[in-house]
Image (tube, rainbow, N blue to C red):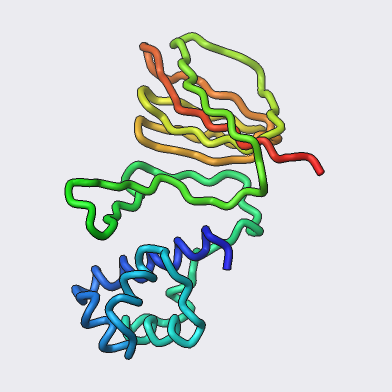
Length: 192
């Protein structure tokens, strides 16, 4: 199972369990598995067998189709993925008091070289549409930025993030009157 799919399944089990106000022990009892196994699954530390996964989903009283809706692997054709600050997953790891994790993005991409930069845009910064031979991840640190693609415009506010294939023509525009900044991560695929 691909790592991004595993994390999506783990997160969904944890989210649904919490929504239904069920403890880890209660879910384990209902699914006829150990509390430790549920904890390992929820923390993406183990891959459940198909039968165990189905029992857990049934124990959560969720339709299988509903549970797997929107779970995608890296083979899914997703040209641009937007994630709003309000959609980030908050999670905890066992034995980590005072640690606050926020999963911003999990997406499998083939083997790549990573380049991490901070991009600051002045209010009047302009350039034509460009293409980059990389997947690009953008996290808005400050300001309001509009990303222009060939046929689409997407507005990102502070805390929003986006992942897209940089081979699509694109350019950012600072919509504010002060500097805007972004954390930018380029994933350059290794040529075979």
